[in-house]
Length: 260
Image 1: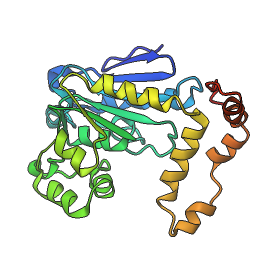
Image 2: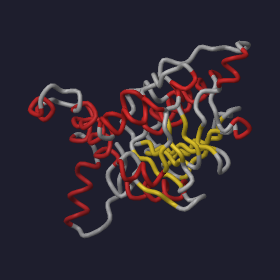
Image 3: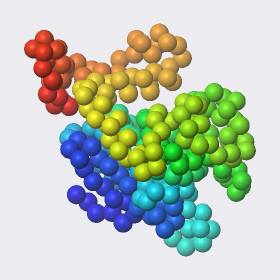
């Protein structure tokens, strides 16, 4: 497995766990880290044996404080980012495999945008979410200003974004962008539980479901969304899993998913 300077990447069976490893700056990200993320998610996307990714942050204080403003202010190192965006994820639209955020502390600015780009957010009780960019003369343009209003009611999203206000994990769950709140230190275990539930399903079905639902959201009408032919749905119909699922059901046993 490739070595990374700013990330730790481990595998547990078909699960890839990516840990932002910059606790000295509350796991804030700078361009070199974005490029490492890009490599990680390219590899995850292309590996048929990896089915689910989990993102978390090192330590118990921060998932990610977002953009490394000190690095940006110094203006010394490289400043370019990959086309896939913040953490190689926020502008990535070709990833049909599920990604879970295990938020263990602050998820501020770009850190919150990473979490919003994931399919599921599991947050510890001490997690804090915010898009505070306007407070420092910036804007949450790595997807935050677009994803948050699509995830929660518009007025609540505008209230958060126009004030840079902070929201707790409990309030995030009430609003609907947090799937589960866990005790402090339990976010990663919670994310693994969600991953285990997902793995009870066919990986081919999961990819077809994610691709059809996400692409369908941009269709002009519900009929267009339903009647569109999606590549992942065609791949599901041609897969071994498409036969294995009904066969296992008929034989009253657990299915042996192949993911292909």
